[in-house]
Image 1 (cartoon, helix red, strand yellow):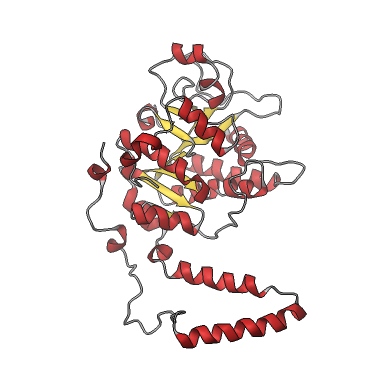
Image 2 (cartoon, rainbow, N blue to C red; image 1 turned 135 degrees about the vertical axis):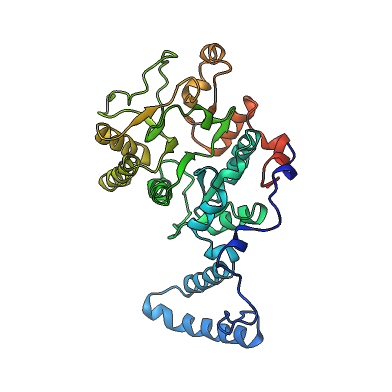
Length: 359
């Protein structure tokens, strides 16, 4: 499908809000940094700080970069775009589809978006950007579909599985989702190293609080139970935090609050390079008696360790697959190669189908 078919009218979500870009008539507008007087003043300040800061143990270049980055962000019209405005813009029938990205993940975002667009669900997508570059890039190509929820973390190493940056990145997930529920919306969360083969919203049977997928590779019968699986060797189940659907109920909010509590109890350390998934499993287990939980069908939502490693099972369940998750493998290049090997790296030949086009 051509990306032209799903372009919105020229109006943007900002035209329906109280936000307006800085006006040239605004007496409180930021002072331009490009005037000769300002540049001279900055040069003198740099020289002064260069002499003074060694005595104070400060690094003047860090101060300058901080001022520059702050100014760049404040001058962006999307700097004041709120979560409430974004949700009002993308929600359809009270539901939004959410992913969370930092700049290194943009190619995977684009690949995932192509598959979402093929199911005609792209207008419901909200990208939560974890850095300014991602916020501006997405909204430049697709106005209104990205929002940044402060504070902004240091993006260094955020894409390296097992790093402290990765933990800090994923640990914000329950907080973001809880904010959306508190605004009264249903939310489907997806990692962006996924590809849709069918519409997952059509597979959400019943009216449960929280839907999730099993991350175990052991084959389940097609009519398996939808209850939370029993604990494994580590005393907890092995549910994936990659694909979650939540309704704005007290039960779903309770799970997210407990998830946040468990993350506080299991912080990252060099010895224990934790991520957010164990905390999610503890939260599910500790709230199971109070919350209506639903395990999604394995055949529709298989883990990558099953889909990419068991050809016999894939053949036996052909036509039932809905979302394929490219997990059980670490590294961007390895993930891309695997997607290519299975014909799922769509951006090579179908970038025009993405709302973002070719990045």
